[in-house]
Image 1 (cartoon, helix red, strand yellow):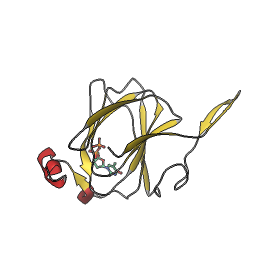
Image 2 (image 1 turned 90 degrees about the horizontal axis):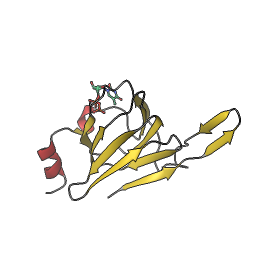
Image 3 (image 1 turned 45 degrees about the horizontal axis):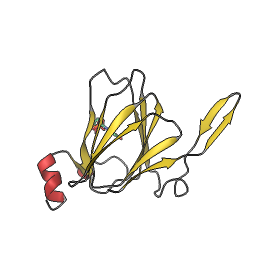
Length: 132
Ligand code: TYD
């Protein structure tokens, strides 16, 4: 499965910590868009779709949540809870985010601008896209 936990730079000092991401240096794509998901009520899920072309880096900049990935063959769940790590997810993977902790913030750095045409929101269509 085309996913990878990427350790991001971190600069720790007595004033607090700082992490950063540079395109094509820490992640293998150019960033065209960033967005963040926050104030997720207890028990709610996000995602539930795949992308045809978009790659992304998902970071739990605050709190924690789980990311479940499914490439049509294999399903894997990651608990993200570190602001100095990102989950790199390539296109063609069905993705669901669950179990947001109180105050969790999910930052997404994306390789494409927003385009509804790049989304596959129907699971049967996803399986067809994967040739299943
Ligand atoms: P949606 O894709 O449903 O969120 P999730 O990642 O949980 O599946 O997006 C929610 C709404 O926000 C939807 O109306 C589309 C809009 N949206 C944008 O306009 N720009 C963006 O960059 C994103 C990610 C979503």
